[in-house]
Image (cartoon, rainbow, N blue to C red; front, side, top):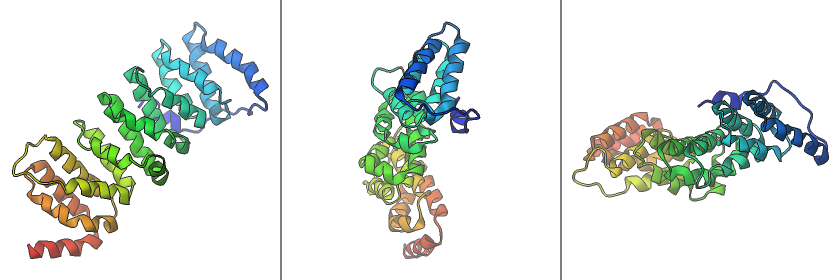
Length: 282
C-alpha cells in the first residue's frame, strides 16, 4: 500500500513531548490553522510533521489529523494514514473511528491497512472487533481488513483471542470468500491462533462430503482454504487432523484434492509415520 513502508520506518525528526495540556493547546490552534490552509503543501507538511512526532504528539491531535481524510488532495489523504499509524493509542482509535458505517469505502480500506501496519501493534489489536466487522464489506475493504487481522494475529495471537473470543468463527466465515486474498489471509490468521485455529479447521473438514460438487462452490472454497491454513500449523497440532486431511483426497472437488495433497506434503516428521500407517491400512 501507499503508506506501508513509511508507517514502519522510524522517524528522523525529534520533538520534545508537551509538558502540560495548556502548552499543547497553544500549538493545537496553530496546527489547526495550518491544516486548514488553502495551500495543499502546507496541509501535507503539517500532517507529516505530526506523523514524525508519533506517540509524542498530544493525544488530541489524532482527531485533528483524522479530519484530513476528508481533504480534497489525494496526497494528504495518504500521509494522514501514515501519521495516524505512528501515533499509538490515539492514532489507533482515530483510525478505528473511520471504520463506522457510512464512511467512504476508500477511507475504510486505508484505515484497515494502517491499523494492520501500526508499529505499536498492541494499540491496534484493541480495535480488532472494528476490523472483523469489515469482513462483510466491499472487496477492497474486506481484503484490507482480513490482511490487517492476519498481521495482528501473527504479532499478538493470545491478546487477539482474549479481546475477541469469537475471532475463529469470524475468520471461518471468511474462508468461503470469493476473493482469494481474503481466503488466504483468513486461513493464515487462523493458523496464527494455534489450537483455536486448528479446531476451527477441523470443524470445517468434519462437514459431510457430497458425492459431487462445483469447483467454485462455497463448500469447496472453504474446505480448500482450511486445508491451506493447516500447512502453517505445527505438526503437533495437525496430527489429530491427519484422518480428515486424507479423507479429502477423495473429495469431489479437484481444488480440495490438490489442497489436501499440498497439506500432506507440508507436514513434518511427527505426522509422517502416522500418514504412512494410515495409507498402508487403506
